[in-house]
Image 1 (cartoon, rainbow, N blue to C red):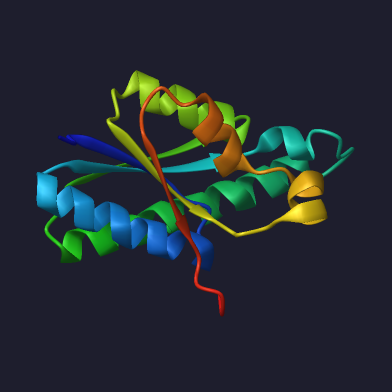
Image 2 (cartoon, one colour):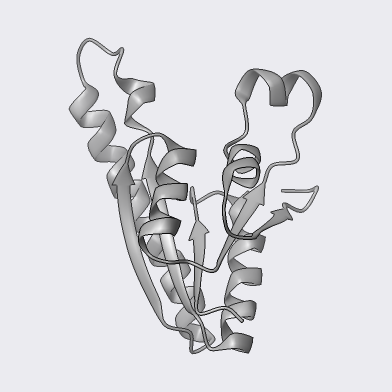
Length: 144
């Protein structure tokens, strides 16, 4: 049923349960995990100085985040591929899923509601609304 499962990660605790669910599904179906971290460089474009340092720091953070997914998958005997890309988070996730023929996207959600969700937006919500493939959303534990 699933051959390629995309797991966008931001390295936060909110994505940890999503990673665990994705790895479990990949193990059951013999699928490969695609771990993706998106450096939302547009957010920092308005900085007059230091943009390169911020982006470089985010890329390092991204490498660590996808490496964590790799380690989790390896413990379960699941194959992985990783990518750290720049761009709009939701658009990059959708483009990556399409370009890599992913069958499923598994994403964490912070569980924001009301004004917080309206003001901050939701990458997960945008992916769910625009994706051509199924999206499994996994809510973070309340204590996280």
